Amino acid sequence: MNDLQCLHELGFVHCDISHHNLGHVEFPDHDGSLVIPILRDFGFCRLGEIPSQYSGTLATASHRVLSMLLEGTYCFPMLPADDYESLFKSMYIIATKRSPRI
Image (cartoon, rainbow, N blue to C red; front, side, top):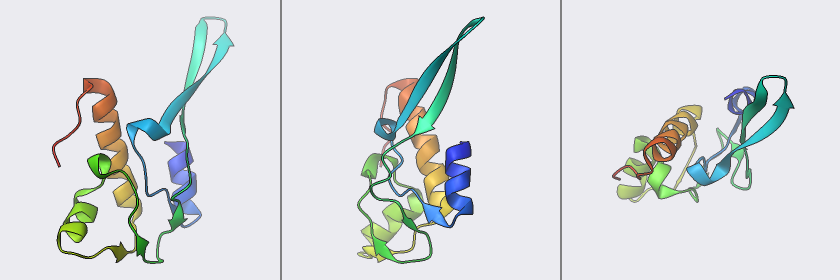
């Protein structure tokens, strides 16, 4: 989550958060392992205020993004809120092993 917050503070939006773009790193520690979640694959990352064509994962796209696409709008600015909703949907997929209905 800190990775995403830092990205947003710099004015960028990830634009493709999905369960495939979440990972973790394990560090040995005296009580077992310290597991740190990481965000990866910044290939679609954009400056948030610049309109661009959506190329992310539809299953984890935010409601706002899906609505824009259904209206036929394919080029629009991305918002940090879109990333956070995608993160929530991705965690849902990981936890339940089921994709949300879109």
